[in-house]
Length: 131
Image (tube, rainbow, N blue to C red):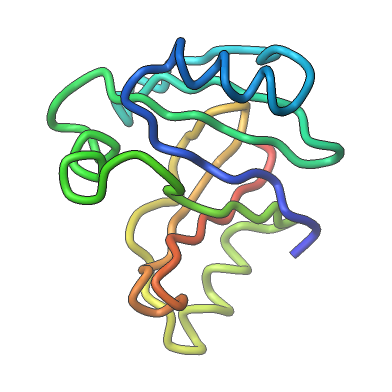
């Protein structure tokens, strides 16, 4: 693991959440990006060397829509930047961790994969690498 890349926060109203995080962080989001394969619209804020990613669904069938329906808005995942995604996944699988999804394209020019939260203290963990 190189570093914490970002935390992902599921929101119901992206504009309202952008105002809140813009106030809290002292600067506006630096970009929005739609990830068609995930049916999600993202908004990113800088936080030192890490980021905060807001996620709002663009389809009722998306994973973020299901998350909001079951758990409401709030923390969705914690993402760690890795040098070699496949090697990290192989290492973690060898230790008994389950991969929920990935590797696949993600937001912010990354390739991503998620570990099962049942294996990671009930936290959805994303591993990402530059695409």
